[in-house]
Image 1: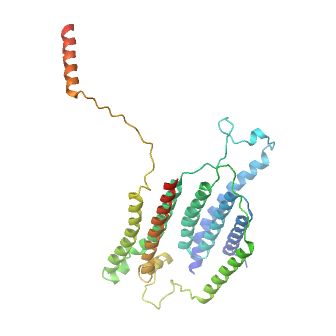
Image 2 (image 1 turned 90 degrees about the horizontal axis):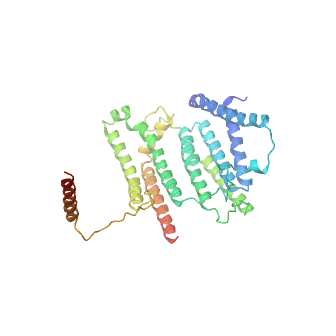
Image 3 (image 1 turned 90 degrees about the vertical axis):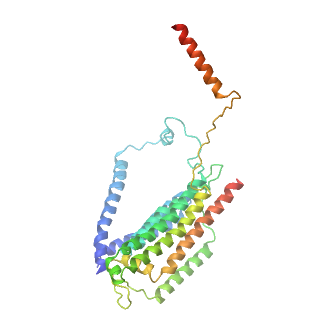
Length: 174
Length: 167
């Protein structure tokens, strides 16, 4: 039986797969970036339909909004002075397929071995029952996963300072 | 049960998405069906106020755009973490259950998080990555060997002389 939710999931999945294939096939590197945008939007739609609203919105904001702008800036920055556009090709097909398979196996292994705790229905621990998944996420971050949370800040600081330092060195040599 | 609620909420969003796609694609397709299609070389050039366009549309970007986008991205990730925090920060039930400890604890945890990232902002600010390069204005500073008071006295004397003569 096909209800509206199932149709939506399948259409988002089709959009994601087709755009991902387009990224692989196209020769124009900027078109590949736009294909990646559609792919990321499709993944965000799948997250939203799976009930992971926070993850979906994060995907939209950070990946579709931020990372892709960074990728397009990167393409714009690395164009050549002779006016030729950079052609994307397929290199190292067999190692790529092997790496993809390895990641797929890793993810399925993690998925099968981990027990997903539904925080909405968790009554076995002391964390109170919250109305919304985002709220329970907030409580978890502030209590159980506090150290990873503060470590994220340190990692972000390292990324910020490191990337600025590298770009400064490159600026000086020019 | 929760997924049903999510689906009904999201179906409104999905409706907007589908409606937007139909209107955009429909407009393009309709105009393609209705229009004449006789391209020539003149029509296919980019319109640049009647001038012939020169060179490539991919101009070299300033590297500073990339750095600003990078900094934006990092602080956006910080912002993402503020959302779940904000939903539970002022939770009355949690504060009442812990005699107010919850509010202060969560407050200080988030302040530490923000402070660590403010260090990065301070670094970027101090090293001048935020400051955009402005064109430098050169102001010519003339230093006269004659002191300014002599000019003033001279002017005063001359205006008095003029004034007196006309009278």
